[in-house]
Length: 211
Image (cartoon, rainbow, N blue to C red):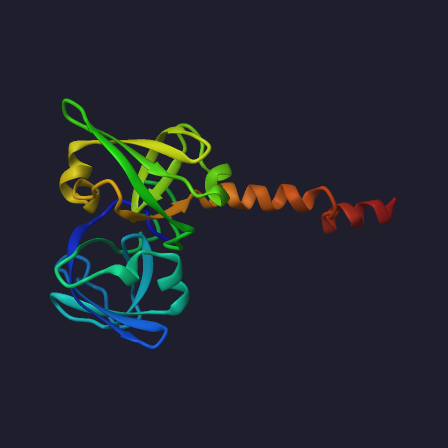
């Protein structure tokens, strides 16, 4: 699990495609500390496994499903990416529970500067709209953010100076794609409610039989 609190901006060294998969090489200093072979690191909100660790760089394999569902396949050498290591058990949950499993790709539609912050509007794929609510949590390119206003096909965010300076969201322009991960709790609730109408809980069945 991650928290959506970006630890550093990494830099793409190379993205080599091999058939329907790819190997991604990234330059980083902070997230490489303690991240050996097999460790997990979120790259723009996508949980990847380290296959070649290093002191100032690491390599990860990206499978076809990830390339299809995220923006990672469009990365190029020199691009900056948001990086985060998993939260340690008992650590501070600074953002919200983030799995690193991207639900879809959206487009940054507009950004309006304020005195010390910016209002950003992002498209909302139809299949994800029901999980996004006003003042709820959402992950955009691995950054835990609070939804200001949720519409049928878009939502707005307020980005503070720290987010603008320390993540890729400060560099994104209208038309740029971004990875979205909705709040996993909303998906679980939906699943439970859908099955609750037709499936009895084993405990309830046992109690009924005992009567």
